[in-house]
Amino acid sequence: MLPINRSYTLGSFASFLIAFREIFEMVLIVGIILVFLAKTEQKQMFKFVGYGVFAGLLGSLLIAGLLSISLESIRSV
Image 1 (tube, helix red, strand yellow):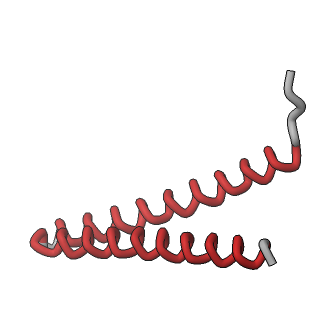
Image 2 (cartoon, one colour):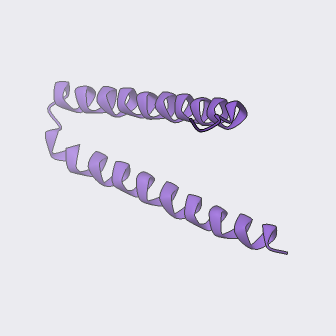
């Protein structure tokens, strides 16, 4: 049986909880915006909400990638 590194496991779980909370908040906010647009009969604006969500996700992934590359280069020094 392989030994379990508990500090790594707890850190991963904490990161999972933070990511889950952030995704849940995003879904709530986007849902509220879509309900508002539907009730005010502005369904043509749904696509712009989708564009915003896509841009936010793409920006987050881009920043995460840049930070990951930066940290790897700092660690190698």
